[in-house]
Image (cartoon, rainbow, N blue to C red; front, side, top):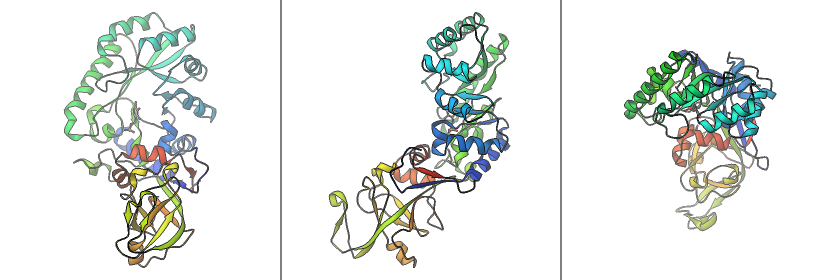
Length: 377
Ligand SMILES: *Cc1c(COP(=O)(O)O)cnc(C)c1O
């Protein structure tokens, strides 16, 4: 959360997140909630607390600083930093706060060992099995094991890898191949005396790839009600997930737009008939993308109304014709829902992501930067 200059409200249903967590556990047993990037915009500390109530003890964050924040908030279980350590400060923080950092390169390992200077450090070894971003390769395994044998204070407690195409049923062979390589790496490590837990699955793999469910699963988007299989043949696997985020903005003004008049910058929309429009107090400065201009919809009083003209910095106009046709009276001060909202007009994260030309992950992360409310706490 960092936007404080607007009237946009981001309303988070923690019970929905708990529900989604229970669903993932039912499928996959040991599930570590991924709460990086401020819990995908839902609130790092609030989500951690809500899931603690549900029995979660361990959490995965992104950078080490988030892990430190979580420790300072009183989380005492294992905290895994998926993107840490990056620099010397991170190395020190990892040691001081007993954080399990993902380590995927020799430079990082050397830096950590130097900083540790004999003090014990637990790490998760990260392997690249096909994502081609970060991680040791299988070929580096002998050198890695040799390095670790010489540094008994650096203790690998986990081996991990990340899947590139788990959300695409058509690419399941690629996911299976990644799992195969990863399992061989884990076996090799264990045969060499390293007692690592194996962690491979993200949400998509928890839901759709049984062969990827190993000791520890890492669930992110599913906890927030995003369906990684949306638009694919496996879409129904996400039917029971419940979106947790709704976003509302006030109607600032309602007026008539006469036939032939243009609206908003550039007059990219011209009324083809007399119509009533509402000016909604949200725009791209509130992370409501300008790409939604003339494309997205807003839920007003339970009815979806189309955006007309360009999304501005702090304002967006919608055509109220559908609301009027449904007998809904709209006035200044009413809530207009950019995400969620009441009735049949409810806007799902996937709908919004589709209009926006992105994925639910981005919708949550950026809209979650608005002022948040937690009604059930
Ligand atoms: C973000 C992330 C996850 C969670 O992925 P989802 O698709 O959101 O479930 C798991 N593992 C790593 C390494 C990640 O960065």
